[in-house]
Amino acid sequence: MAKLNMRQDVPVELTWDLSLIYKTEEDMYKDVEIVKELADRIEQEYKGSLNTAERINACLDLYQAMYEKMTLCWNYCDLAVSVDYYDEHNQERNNRVGAAMTEIMSRLSFISSELMEQDEAVIQEAIEQTKTNKGYLKDILREKPHHLDPATEQALSSLSRTFGAPSDIYNMAKLADMKFPSFTVDGKEYPLGYSLFEDDYEYNPDAKVRRAAFQAFSEKIRQYENVTAAAYNTQVTTEKTLATLRGYDSVFDYLLFGQKVTREMYDRQIDLITTQLAPHMRRYAALLKRVHKLDKMTFADLKIAVDPEYDPRVTIEESKEYIKKGLAILGDDYVSMVEEAYRDRWVDFAKNQGKMTGGFCASPYGKGSFILMSWNDRMADVFTLAHELGHAGHFRNANREQSIMDTDVSSYFVEAPSTCNELIMAHYLLKTSEDKRFRRWVLSSMIGHTYYHNFVTHLMEAAYQREVYKIIDAGGSVTADTLSRIFKETLTKFWGEDVEILPGAELTWMRQPHYYMGLYSYTYSAGLTVATQAVRRMEELGTPAVEDWKKVLKAGSTLDPIGLAALAGVDITTDEPLKNTIAYLGEIIDEIIRLTDELEEA
Image (tube, rainbow, N blue to C red):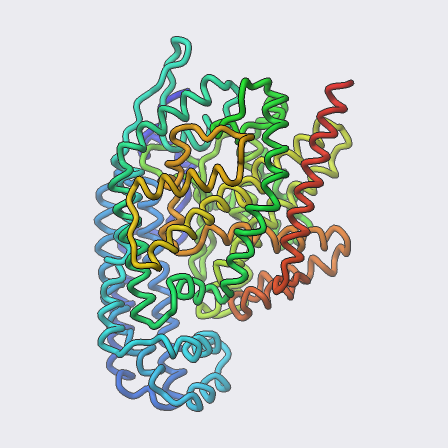
């Protein structure tokens, strides 16, 4: 296994094409100047006079035009940094443009402040007179009780980049400063890095290599545990301070307010999955131990495949046909988007030093999407790409149908379209063959990738995170020792005596950027719950259910999560969808075990 290349040595065809946003850096800077000019105009024409419905909408219409260009500038600069944290030019440009945009948003904070001070009747009149500003104005009314005086709001807005510093520090330590040494197994030397470990070694079928990689990886990140803990403690205490300033009873209420969901919905995901899914996943872990003839089942072994010899190698070009055929159920327009994504280089497939780990999809308004991932020639990568294309398809539809003001979908729901795509792909593959080994492979991919990632990995993070915020809510703070203790307790509670929690497993709290995004980790399971029920409905009802899902994709943020789920035929006001999803996982695991028994007997 070769050491990762530097970014400049990566073949261009494996990288995304940011010229789809701006042909040149100079073009981007021209838009920065336009943004500044529009901001000046908004301030000069409307500051101090947002007192009629007509003036309110005229101001917001101009603000939308400015914000559309601002998001393009932001994305162009930020995406360039995400693939190469060693590039000083991109870092400097991102900081410079970010600072300019922060200053503009601070100056324009008068808009929300003045609207908050208006009588509700004036805001309601403005809502009646517009389509594109409705969502923003409704949120103004909703947020009114928690709004501070204009001077304070402007000060907080001007500090927005400072508030983002913990995340920046985390990413810099993780992606730029950590240099991993190689490790040796049976006299053979293996290179190591964040991406190599998380995308390759965690799935390696050789237990010696897999466990040695885990140990070497853990020893390296442990060297950064105190600075990472300090960054995270700053993040959560800042959130608590803001919650208190804005008059929320708890930091949970503050963080869930923007998601437009209740504390009950949040707790339900964590509590039900932790208790009811654990027995099923322990049986799955026992199956892995049995088929791999392991001396013991450890935390380092949980991501291995049931049948690693039956893990099809898939090239990037081959993946296109899988995804086009799999997602064809969503219609010709969706398939055209998939073709466009490959043809126009929406996806950054490359593996290089200094690149963010994991995957994400950014969809700047008025443009296509930009997907970050690392391609490893595995079928798992096909599912990952289908997932990120789910985000792309969601925002392609929402951006076409809604104004930029109505595309900020609640994070509670935003993972539903992405995980839905993973399930659609799996259901498609199940229909392509009746071979038992192939069927077991697809089902185990669903459990080991889609559900494990969203219902176990991120759920463990969410359960840990809830305990952290309880400490912060009570006026405390957290250190590396505290965070490691909480995470180990969380893992032990879920896996019991069936999985040995190796030294280093407790450091999993160091590995995810989601902790710097509020209560985000639990939303993966929330989205997948909706997706599971929506796909099962598609399997049962066919076209009508698919058409309902298309309506969801177009709705943007015009509905809250309960309304979006209801549009897809799923009632998330009760625990029934989640319980049904957990039971469905149990059924899949039962079938994987049965198929394994039959294959072993044959």
